[in-house]
Image (cartoon, rainbow, N blue to C red; front, side):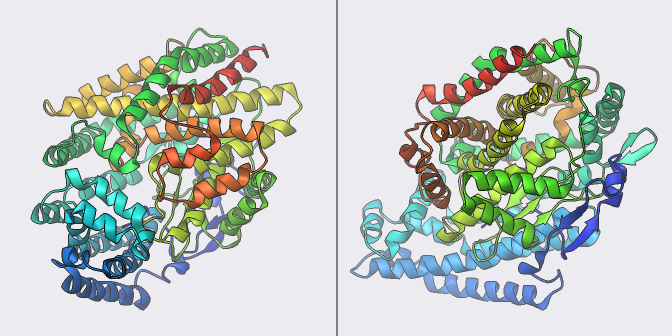
Length: 620
């Protein structure tokens, strides 16, 4: 089933009055900001259509279980095995799509305001009901995996079952870690009161937090935005504000972290995963040695990338060390203009259009058809995401737009995801989802297209320096910082196996990893030890973070291919995105002459960052 992410039940154009005032902007600076229209999924939480779909999927699931449970092995044998098994998979896929639509809607509604008790109840009740339905479907993949390999291979050798060979191959990889039916059912049903409940506690706690800044109560996103202020005193106060509130809630976040790490350890132990991150590698369809090569390459590059850049930035600020709140600060003596929403939209669409009119046309639908939620508001999920929903519908994008250049890059990033999801939808709900390592490809490529277009148009040396510095910082945040996050998670999960960790122990591990990755030019002041608390990936998707570094380095290599041989590149690129989850990363990269298993592959991506730093050093 599609993992739900969060939303708003109706569309309207809003002036960003409350959002702007909470971020220190003047009303009208950003222009009208869109709020998404979820009516393409369902008109409202209480809509008869939603309840009718729930009843239908419950009825279809019961009928499906009655028809197929305990019978798949016999269906897989005989002359018409391909047809009979394909009929079963198609019925399963139809249920998956309908249930995924319901789950997507409830998740998006919840994301629009996680502090709204009606949204929280709707989300929780939907999860409970969907888990019961999924419990009745659990047998299907388990029974398919008990069919003899030779028998299933014979059935899948011809159409119509051959269409689903990539999906069958995917679930086959889970076979060594599969438990018996009763245990799998217990794991599934207990997830609602186990990991699911702790995830929800994190979301609701984080959305309810308010941070005191100069006498005003602000949301997390509004305070984080202060780190982009040109006034260093504002940045320091923002850091102090975050640290104070995080410190007051450390016990809660430490308990959530300990509980989820232990929950994962129990699951991994029962399933037989050897390493703490192996389950993530399996779901990403990437080999452990490939990830280890990436991590090793990035860690070896710390001195050439982050340490080198922050030393240069400290020099620009006239200090030997930057305070941690100045790490992403705008360069001194540079005015940062607020970018209205319409300008951000045009910038991204024009950059996409320069690469391919088809790419721009798909992205334009998100603006024209009300698939984007942009304003910052209390209770709204922080950060940004693109949720694919289901192939029978379309994706939705959430951003918290405050008019900064990085917000434009975030918009380009999430729309890249959206384009990818639209193209992959043709594979159906079972094969449209893309492993996380490749899911970041289109998003980072969209960012790169937008950046390159803006850079090529910039002739002023000072403005070019600002753009390059901003891009280097974004790439360091995407590659170096995410690998540091991965290292932090590994240390936390490994340490948790020896016993519960205190909040102070978690903070100490955080500081140790950050010092290693950021280098001596960044001074980690008091309060920074608590900043691990607000990273949602640690909670929702353990070890997800290396996918960002994977995607960034992959895109850097792809972009080098594009620059050197652009003829026919767009067609190969769209073919890669359209494959969804039907092909392994090695197969998808082959048309571009790239191989992620080659250690030199990662050096191409890292060397691009290094070349930008060298260019910045030459601007002194």
